[in-house]
Image (tube, rainbow over all chains, first blue to last red):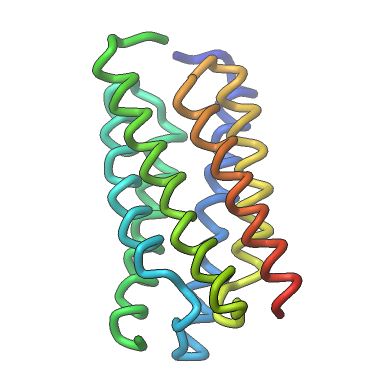
Length: 87
Length: 87
């Protein structure tokens, strides 16, 4: 699986970007207490998909895939909680 | 890279879920013409991350990673266009 340090670093940077991207969304929803424009379907389908990505990453032993999707699941889960609270 | 048909199918299902999850968000933004609660930072960082994921997937020759992130980039790009149009 290991195609060298560069590839793993690239994957980790990619994962860091897609993961951290949900932080401004989480903060925005938290501060504004408004989630009307955010699709519940998106959050639900995305969370389900993240769980499967984590299982996939575990099977193919892909560290960036496992780590990125796990942290993203925490953020998206929190946004989902805010969506349910501030409908 | 190929750990068997099941693993590839699992990855493709995971990718289909995380990719299709942006479709309800795209339709919601399109219909409501309102994207106020959607974070621009999320869309920008997520798009940048998707580009790197595609490069990563190409290097490690991971078909589910390449396909899922490519289609997701199209959907998220369209949501970004709507965000810029309906601020």
